[in-house]
Image (cartoon, rainbow, N blue to C red; front, top):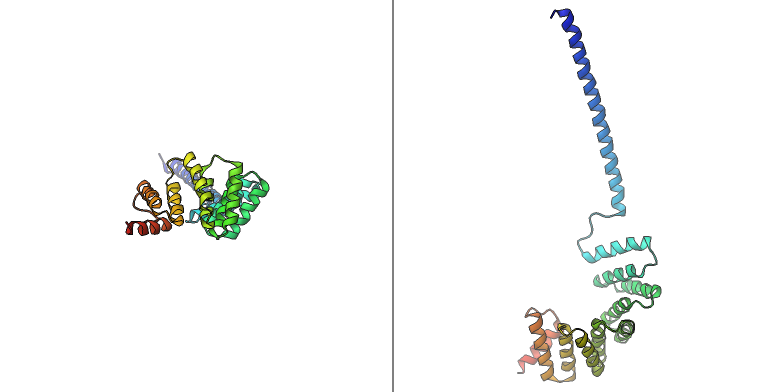
Length: 228
């Protein structure tokens, strides 16, 4: 092949290479623009849908239910769920507000009354706690936890016979409830019936194991066993 034929072929090849380079550069620039646009959109979404929630699961529940309430402001379940998270965070005023809102929106919401009762109980308002637990029982009389909760409030109020009656309901509904054994032991302990208190508290320890975390039960059991 003479030089006259090689030169046009070389020029054509170089032109194709140059065209390919230009095409690749255009594609690369478009990809970079798309990537930048995607990152920009992602940063906006992060403000609305957090992908990195707080390590504390209750704080995460507050954030999640707050977002839900922005979309559905009259949903009592979201208020109750957020109130429960506030309660675990010991933000009692916020919890009380949400439980009040839940029962306003749904007057037959048993869990909301029971949870509000727990706020009252935690803050030492045992009469209010017993009243809210009672309302929960009126709505749903088949939940043994409501009776157990009210029994705790009654014990704090010194209404021991009422507490024992409620604990019997709990035992009927939940025969294997260790908390019912513990609470009954504490009621008998408060009444001065040391023998029955010891039986119940020892049974409670057997049911949950020796790694008890309930300070009241541990203190009472240590006192009773030291006197055997």
